[in-house]
Each structure stands twice: as structure tokens, then as C-alpha cells.
Amino acid sequence: MAGTLPYDQFLREQIAGDSLGAGEATGFLVAGPHVPAATVGREPTAIRQARADRMDEVMQTVGASIMGVTMGCARCHNHKFDPITIKDYYSMTGVFQDVEFGSRFPEFSPEDPRRQRGEEIWRGIAAQRRVLRELGGWEENWGAFRELHFKPITTKSIRIRFKMDNVGLDELEVFGPDERRENLAHRSRGTTVSGFPEDGVDGRFPIERLIDGEFGTMTWRGQTTKSSKEKPWVQFEFKVPEAVDRLRLSSNREYFYETDYLDTKPNLPRYEYDVDMLKEDGTWQPWVGTWFVNKKLNEEHPERTPALAEIQRLIQTLSEEDPRPSFVGRFVLRLQRDDPAPDGPRPRAADVLPQRSGTTPDQRPRTRRRRRPGVKCRPGRSSRGTLSASP
Ligand SMILES: [Ca+2]
Image 1 (cartoon, helix red, strand yellow):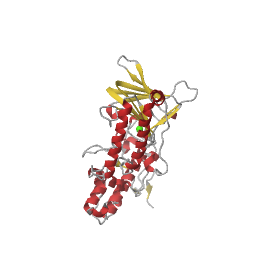
Image 2 (image 1 turned 60 degrees about the horizontal axis):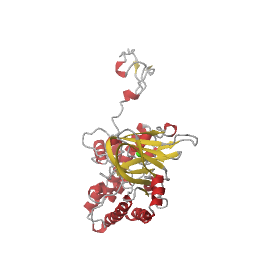
Image 3 (image 1 turned 180 degrees about the horizontal axis):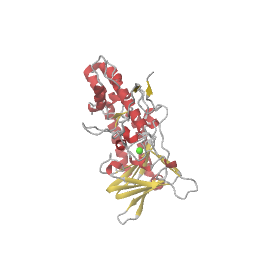
Image 4 (image 1 turned 90 degrees about the vertical axis):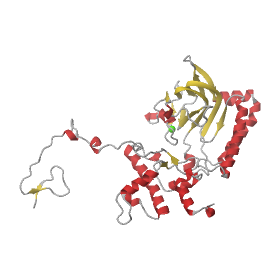
């Protein structure tokens, strides 16, 4: 394909392939070395530093490979000879601020053969799902995540009760029949989450991670002792009643794309759980569960077996032939001009430096130090005790 592609078009696709039906071309933006966000820790300045380093990697790639000029120096100072200033550098990083190192479904034009093949497989999956929908719920194994499909119901709240002592999830998504791609549990919709244990293990794995839209190693870990009567559970409260018919449980699905995916596909452990729905009268109604769909319904309806097997075969085919999420960058935000910085305003030095007790820098009494004749400030030293007689 590159042989027939005009060079200017090729360059445009490297930078903005997502808008040009060539989403995979943006992979070169994130092809350089980087520090994954998950290894940085929780310290805000370390997180910002690592993010700035990743943006610098993008800028160096764009500058050196496309513009034929190294731009990295302008991160700290104006270039001495090339007409590139610090301002230019940060203006250009602004262009790429919505890019993060990670995976997404690459955008393809409708004519792209991979996209057409993917749509064909998806039509096959949809046909099998229609067969199964007539016969109650079922579970699909997508490797890094599992989906529980069930009869639709409208409810204000869902509760998922696990039957095991140890559960680790990076996201727990809820979908409905109306808008099939919209995660109804995402916190941006006003959904709240509670459960047990709410802070995870050692207070380090909070349950809010289930609804923040982030996938990876930042998980909720619901771990209890074998003797504990209470097993892990999760409860969602929607802002308004929602029609729901599908749960998706996942754990570190990005791992698949970042490392040795050719050898090892990720595999979410099979979690057993029951799902209750809140009725209008405030009582809970047992609605569905993994035992119900995998055991009871299969025994009652052995005719489901071919459809279940065919869905799993198509899922496997999809992972080989469909444009799957690839490490071509993921989009984290859409900045408009004059929006505040994505990581919030920087703290002022005066707010974070240790202060004298009971005073802020602005309140400190201004005292004028009287200079004795024949005594000078030594250059470069300004704190107390540096006044000394010149030799
Ligand atoms: Ca998450």
C-alpha cells in the first residue's frame, strides 16, 4: 500500500490516521520507549513528570522523522539557531495531548478488507446471540474479559455477589439493549459504586476503580479470608433507572497488547457470582447468575450447545482476523483551546513548601536587614548566615 501512497498523504496518516480511515498508522507516534503509567506510582508530580516524558517521546519522533529537526532541546530552552522556541515546543505538544501510550481499536475506512471481515464475523455472533436470547442468558469468554448476557430488566441498582474469596477486576461494565456500547456503570454517567471490601486489600485497591474507565493494573481487589462469612460484592446505583442486559468483567486486558501477545493471551479467571436487581418497592430480586446460565439453562436446553460453541469459535476467529485493539495509542481527552490543563492546576510553590508555623509567605513580617559598611552579599548565596566580610 505504501508504494501507491503519495508521501504527503502518508505523513498525514502518521499524525492523524484516526480521522483519515487509517487508524493503525498512528502507531508510530507511540512506538518509542516510554514509562508505563502503572509503574510510576501515585505521587502526583511523578505522574506528571512521566506524562511529560511520554509527550516528549512523541515530539522527538515527530520532529526527527517528519520535520527533519530535533525538537527535544526546546523542551527546556529556545533553540540557538533553528527558529524553534520553548513556546513552539509546548504548542506542538498541545496538538498531541489527547494521545496516550496504549491500545485502541484502529479506525479503518469502510472499504478496508479487515474491517469488512470483522463486520462479517460480528454478524455471525449477532445471529447466534439471537438464538440464545430466546433461551435465557449465557456467558461469553473473550479472554481478557467475560460477558454475562441476560434477560433485559429496568432497574435503579444492581448488586453482584461473588461466591469466591478473592476477586480482582480492573473494570466492571454494565450495558443495556438501548445503546449497546455505552457503559451504564461509568462514573461519568453519575453512577456510584459501593461494596465489600470497599478499599480492597490493605486500602490500596479501592472499589471506585471499577467505574473509572481505566483498564490495566489498577484494580479493585476484593479479598476475604476463607472463614469470612461475607464474600466480596459490588453494588451500582444508577442516576436514573436503566434497562440492562449484560455485564462485562475484565482484568488487565491492556497487558495483552503491551507485551508478549503472540505467546500468551490473557485469561480472566472464571468468577462465579449471582446478580440481584433492585425492584421499585425497594426489595432485591435475584435475576441471574453464572451457575444459572452455565449449568441450569444448559441442562434444561441442550439445544443451546451448538450456538454457544459457535459463539466461542467466532470470538476466537475475531481475535485473529478482525482489527482488534492494537498498540497504536489511545485517546484520553479532547482538549479545546483555553481548557484547563488535564491534570489540574499546578500547585504554587508557596502552597507546598514548608512554612513557618501560623504564617503564610504573604503574612510574614517584612524586616529590613541593615547592611553594615564593608559587608557584601556573596553572589549566589542569599539565605541567612551568608553575610560575611569581604576579604
Ligand atoms: Ca478501572
